[in-house]
Length: 232
Image 1 (cartoon, rainbow, N blue to C red):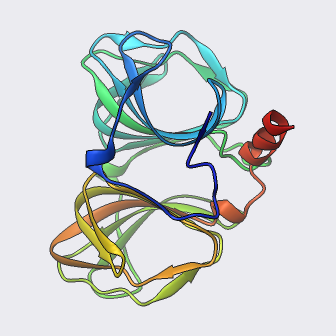
Image 2: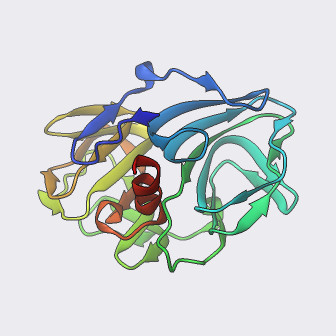
Image 3: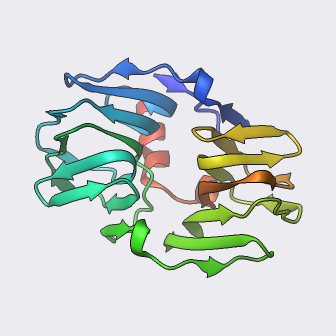
């Protein structure tokens, strides 16, 4: 299965484009944002757990990154409310479920080969750092060999400089309305800008909160090797 798997192209998915499909587990559905592979895949998805649903215990050979968007996500290690950021490196296993239902951003097979850090961050209690321009606040979540993941809060009417993303950029708009010269992106919008893309982002009176990952389209990821293996 190939969904937005040409990483040289810009992709924009708006909330009105969402089409959830059932997973093999009853009560768990997915909106596939990008995917290369079948049930085992290098993938980025919005995943919904209905109340009382979950997966059997399984191992993540390619690693898993999760941002809890709504509700409470759980496994045998704990409960993770909205705003929780988790990284389960290759080789880890768990049995995920949700008692009352939840919505997640999930990225699979997108770890560097030497990244073994396991993380659980409650972003509701973390401090923000001043960004590069007035009105911009940054909460770093993870960094490894030039691949950086963060939450970025944009105050109303904030203007950023025009810049180039040498290693690409991926954005999920969590709150407000994010803008650049190419369009407007309400909460729930997902953007993937390829290597060496450039833009001049800004906000209007609504402001915005975004999840952003940069550098990962120019990195030696397990997922790249996975794609090569399933394509061979």
